[in-house]
Amino acid sequence: MGPGVPLQTVRPMKAIFAGTPDFARVALAALHAAGIEVPLVLTQPDRPAGRGMKLQASPVKQFAQEHGMTVAQPRSLRLDGKYPDDAAAARQAIEAAGADVMVVAAYGLILPQWVLDAMAQGRGLGCLNIHASLLPRWRGAAPIHRAIEAGDAETGITIMQMDAGLDTGDMLLEARLSIGAADTTAALHDRLAVLGGELIVQALRRSADGPLPRMPQPEEGITYAHKIEKDEAVIDWQLPATVIERRVRAFDPFPGALAHLAGEPVKVWAARAEPGTGTPGQVLEVSPDAVRVATGDGVLTLLQLQRAGGRRLPVAEFARGLRIGPGMVFDAMVRR
Figure 1 (cartoon, helix red, strand yellow):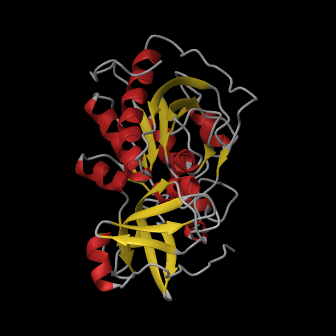
Figure 2: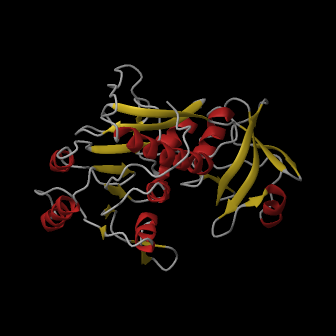
């Protein structure tokens, strides 16, 4: 059920788009390139970002404005919630758009029932979600991170017919993607974003000829990709090296795998698991291009590190600023 068909202009169609981060921007760009009219874009309100903490528009808003698309940024879509005026204005904008479908990708707000009902009218295509996993595995907020952390061999994109549940809707299309041994969340994210854009265009192209076949999600194999919390970044040296290495890749670019050496925080951005034994957290060997640290099972060879306020550096450069020698021990840290 993979994409496999080059992007091309589809039968005239109007699609409201709801999304916020770069993953969603790629999908919006694919819709635009395919000639699909986007009369309305919903995205999260501008947020403080950067060292100056200035308000910054989301990647989706930036793309939409560059291409003359109407943008709405409600703080909530719940008519009975904290921001009813925002929700009411959004409802008016959605109804006025006269769209055939709503495409949702990493929007960040839950769609209440009135949105699902409104988009089911007319041509009846409803709300289609671009989800970065092979459902029902890794429903939820962080499917890319959790797939790498768990050591999955593959992941993919599922185009899902949205319902009131959390990623529980019927599946329409899916495409699979292998997870490489060196893949980080950043690298896998970029490939999945492109795949998601291709697949949603294919879904809309097919839907122009009639409703897509819907497949209910199986009851077996359901897992949840809970949001990544900062305290998960802390390295537990008692764990096997293979587990730590996967977390290093899963937490790149956020929040980064965190350790402490001689009282100083150190982020680990690249590492590999190797055989070996020793006291967990102890530095066994330092070479020009690697630092070998014992774990609960095996050795984690550190390849790229970062000091607080610094930049990512290969071990050789990093070691010139922070002396590391055999016998030193990374401080024991316990997750909350």
